Length: 302
Image 1 (cartoon, rainbow, N blue to C red):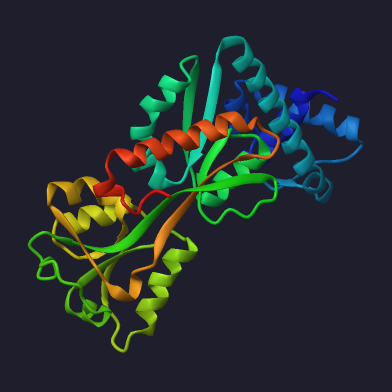
Image 2: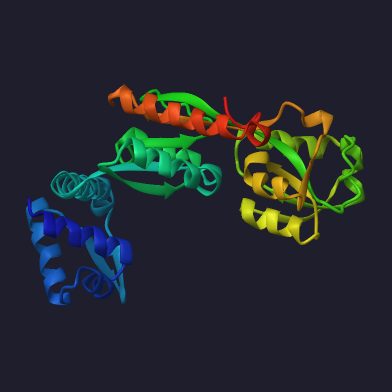
């Protein structure tokens, strides 16, 4: 079976148009049409039918699609593997946003020193996607929360407390602990990262007698931090995401006893079938980084 014909089928389905698929494949429309017809003959099945001006995938096309996509994906991975073997050694690390933005920049020089012949590819994804990438072999290592896949080895490397972060001139920034009920006194920015520990913060809000004034809901730690820095609100963030601002004094972390044990936990993961030595060395590097500034990361690393 011709791989080019299968690729044409996948592209036409993705774009919903032979015209758009031909542009993406850098082919003429007749060439793409010819490839689809050839594949239909090989499969003895109609894959698309026209309804007016629309191109609609058939039931048999729908059934064949996941197999076609898997063939293309496997072929792509095989090509990339051979290219990496010929051109250079590369370590792919998939990370959650917390690690990618606030930890990886500090780790990279040490990783490069330990693995001088390697290049590094860093990919920022959700924890669920990170775990899937490592399990499927699309990433060598991953930093993710709530890892449950049996194909993976995981070791806890980060435990960053979720703390109430306020501007340095905010009334709550006097060094005293505050009762959670006082959150009604000031606007809140709420960052939702999707982890189980983060859900505890949200559930805590729901349990209050009077609901906090949540004026901003964001899906980015940097957006939440920027809103707090501009004194528009206060909010709960992982300590690791604001360590620089805490050091500089532009932001202050306030203790809320009700959330004393809530933290954003992250594991370093790799596939069970991989060489354990590299995994152990990367873990050791992370622990070395954590020991350099214990006053900032006293609870951020395990």
